[in-house]
Image 1: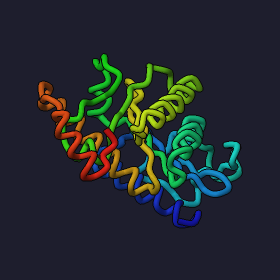
Image 2 (image 1 turned 120 degrees about the vertical axis):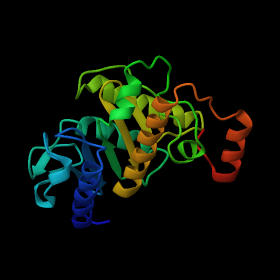
Image 3 (image 1 turned 45 degrees about the vertical axis):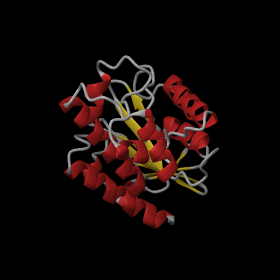
Image 4 (image 1 turned 135 degrees about the vertical axis):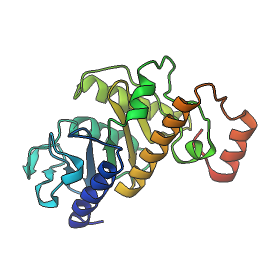
Length: 219
């Protein structure tokens, strides 16, 4: 995917997420890692009405090169790319949203993860979603904590594709904007199921073993 295609895809994915209620107002951001820098949605931009030509273009150090002012979350995105690429060099897109059901679950979450493994597709397509301690939006401490979680899960043989920022929203990443969007959708819909059926038991250990053996599930 070249830069022109990446610009179009960021806008297509942003519009799709907005139109289907996964993002609202000016919340959320999308970035793509290029060979020589990054593209990221502008600060305070509505993801439903992005202009490909106005996306922020940044260099490899995260400094603005062109376009509208980039979202302050580029610091977090860069940490995610750096950590995730250590085990998956194809990581190219990060999406952050304030998706309602994920945020609602995080308000009273007390465990190390946002969700237990309650459906096979959540296990197969998303996997573990560790909770980060609460930090203000744009906090450099949150970025460091996320990177540490990515590396620690990879070292344990359970690489992750998502983390949850309590009271703010999830960050997900994958090799394309479309794949990252699909991961976000599965995560948000699983959170919705958990809110509808809060006493749902997790899948059994034997079920998880079967998913790992059959599909390489990350659990």
